Length: 256
Image (cartoon, rainbow, N blue to C red; front, side, top):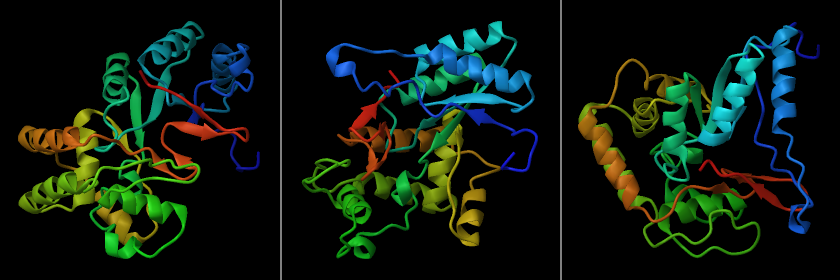
């Protein structure tokens, strides 16, 4: 009602039922099916035209798909963290599982908070003291983590420099921007990137990723450059890529 609409186009569960404050004492009460039943009810009551989930790995995704199908509901989407800096942790297998089940895979953090846009530079971040800037600079250059929550952790010297060089080389050769190449790489893998934008120029840059595809050779170049890195992008500060801060600490999920 507050949205001023009778229904929404897509309603998604934000994450698996990972908030289990007594798990350390051996007490858990996961209610995944109850959440799925809630999605089904919203669909059948006309509150949502489509329903989906977020941060589900292949196993949980298959369970949800089967559960909803029994209630006559199609699982439309699964939104996961996926980009050139986050390919492991089950992400690629989850994208494949989505394709096999006919579920749209939406990729959040497709540009890793700007790290893969080609516009975020050490000089622009150096000297800033906020957690986000400090950790993004560490991803770019490398360095030892510290403090709390220390989301980025320790990053080897050089950071993501080798990947950015490969990204820039591909972008220059095909006449695209690094951001467009990064987004198109996600589409080539079979997922749909959902980048943010703070200006008209960013919207136009993002839109430039549409209507074409990287060659298999360029995809391989980027895959190899990403695989060389010994770390992945886990977010910054309390904006994490694989967990949720829930007051008493971070609860994490795994796609594998």
